[in-house]
Length: 358
Image 1: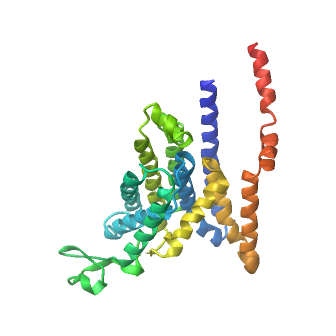
Image 2: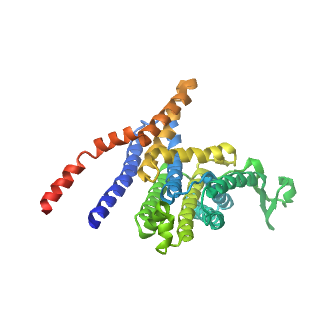
Image 3: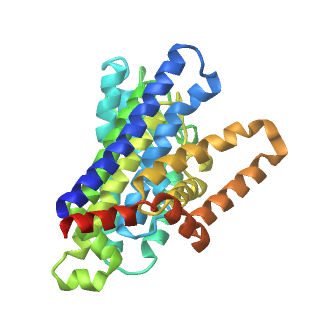
């Protein structure tokens, strides 16, 4: 039974990774043959960004069982940490090398923020994490908008007033311009790099879920008291899952920052609505379903762009699709129908196996 379950899990994971790899291959062929519009080309890197965000949030919401409403805050931290490094290294390092290092920096900074938030909050029960992460997302956005950071021969200078207060010497450079953010970040993000990061994210999350650590995390989600009674360190495993989720959001933020020339901490980029949008992707894809998060993110992100020509009816159709998707995932009638369609062969196979064993 164990070997059968492991084989099934391995096959499911390979199918998910194969779907992503096949999507990359198909898009590369279409782009090389000139069959992809400029609009769709511009959406390819954002696809990767939001898939990473959805999969990482699913680790917190679906696997850990905790609600986070400030996932965009970790994305924001990673984006500015990575963009700041690339800005400082511009002209010194190759843009791709700079991006790779920036990814590690962004992930590390976001993970540290996740740990600092998680240590006091994850010891508590209830929706405290949702409230604190929501506050963190808003605080970090407003804090970055208030920071002015510059660099000259004497080192770095910081101010919360304006760029003139930095007192930079001749040849000095303003790195973070308050509400204007960071400008001049190398646009090193590509679809191929995005797909590689998506695959790495999927491998990390799927291996974690199917490991001993992952089973401990899911046992905490299913029954905290029972998990605690058999000696599982609740805080340790919750903090581990939450910090990994935050680090992956930071990776998405670095990719986001290197897809733009100007990075600003605006509400539309890293605000509350962004966190809710990612949460919608997770819920509609199926809480705890990694493959579902990938598919729902691609469909729901692409849909408004495809409906852009309908103008006034675009968001109405989008809302109807969201409702239908929710019903398909949650309504008992649709669940029964899905089981009949996709699970119709399982009882026959099981009965056949039972006869062979007999």
